[in-house]
Image (cartoon, rainbow, N blue to C red; front, side):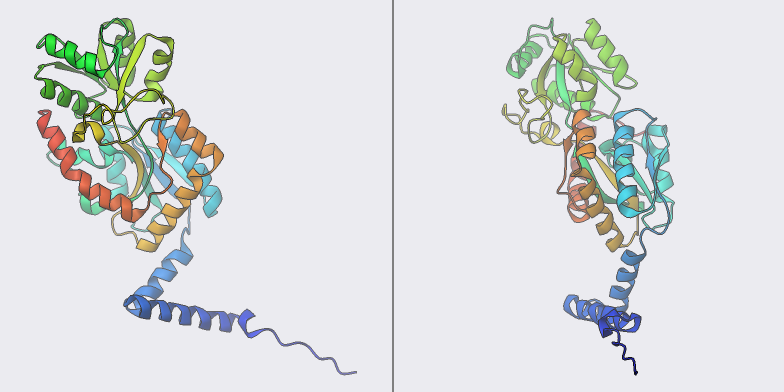
Length: 349
């Protein structure tokens, strides 16, 4: 008896698949106006990524909020991409070490930094000379969350809201001081702007991090400061500190009853701009790789475990960001941060 075998479907053969891929690339190239070779390379970049483990360089020591978020996002990215995403802590030099390592890595999307507004954006205005060009050697990929900060006072200070605080500051010109977690930090810039706005001539006490500042606030050695929810919320909940107002465009879920500066009529850049935590790659990384990374991070942020880490840290998840949006905002914010530093009297070192 003769046996007949059904021939394989043309669409299932390797030759047919390659023909269809070439046809798809050619059609896309024609529609976009890009050269066929460019489109083919873009397709190849996306298809081959990632080809090895990712390295996520964090500019802070293990255990801090940025490190905790980096580990949560990295773990999830590794699961989604099928390659480990390894966190590499490079603290020191105000984040310059971490950014330098990414700036000088291969531009293939396998080396990233997860940092903050200061480490990735405003540092270039804090230092006279960097070993890399932040605007060329780094490329924004996606932001993970907004990082608003909250103005607090010791509960003994006779001011229960921003209006009363501004009146108190105005009545005590030249007598008050405020604390922040470092020269040139967003906290410094916000309260320097408040001092300038009221003509209060307040003194700035720059602490080496939030922990010593919070200790002095709670102890009453410092009456006014600004910092993260993660560091301040327990003392706000206990009544030792009073939350006055938030920076940024909207209220924060962790303290929903605390208004923003903008809500209270103060819409200057210092009060409305928000810090963020985001991911950047090496300059020159192919656009398809950046798009894929951005999509995977957004997907990770929608998972319960990663979203919970963001909220517990006192941040606001940002699930609709993209490389294009991040890059546009990066360029728009550059002159704003530069001017805020100049207005605060911060001199590059």
